[in-house]
Length: 418
Image (cartoon, rainbow, N blue to C red):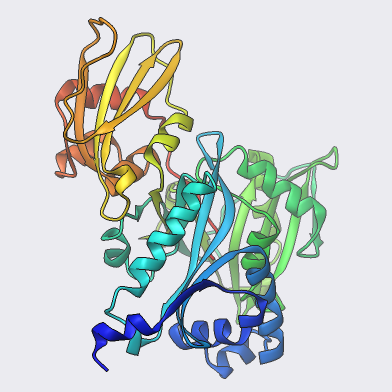
């Protein structure tokens, strides 16, 4: 059978818990999860099968089937993300996989279009994913929005912090204070995922049993910071370190230093987009930065309507002429009327010359921009002036000045993986 004919034999449908064996088998094949890997993380086939049931129950998983055999799939997690102190409904993409013999016939392109259409219907105006290939997802409208920084500190280079009045307490991974603390942190932090149960399950899915959680409580017994860590082979490994104030920061590093007889170095991940080296007395450490999470705006009109632009004391009309490689509803002109009293979005076809409906002396500022660049700009990963300098979009100086003024400052903190 010719490859062009294979697709005619396939059916597209949503997966249910009855498809758990096929779902698990495709994931393990595509991501090369072996029996040895499962054993290392304390899993067996029955355990991993059981752990995947909640995904098929709570997520929207779509796949192509050849009779009863699953050949290509994609999963949509219902999530929320903080964008400059506004909570957005977000679609988390994961489980993107196709058996090699079915590649190259457009199966994943169809799945992505279907899943993005579903997100739009669900009012999930933005989507996030962890990319296995940045070029692949860029070509489909996603762009980098956050970095992961890793560091390696010798035991004599850790921060020397002042004593604090609070105390550290080790707790279980499902402790209510841990969940509440992260929620408080996430609702104050741009780019942070608001973790629901599905997100917490993903957070712990592949961790070894020896990982520990410690919470810092201030003198009023209020939890204000936590650390997730693993002590192994004379290394203090930090998975995540979260704090609401400087006291909690000091308290957690004091707790780390209390283990100095047990480690030679500290390794960890930092998602704050601020270099740790500058904060250390001895900043001569190994610190690396790499792209981490990608995102794409699913529905430009809905996203712009909700987006918390900084306030201004003048009126402006911005015309975004957007190019999207997948979604025709984004290939339009989006007219942002922005005044000190609020904003209004109009949507018109690309080939229509925009004329204000009412007499106005407000100038119209235009920019041609693709969906990838619009996403990374509005998420704060790169600023408008820089993006124009590297040729990512076209706009005059006045338009750039306006964008710089109304787009909030601050890079996204995103520490989750799914």
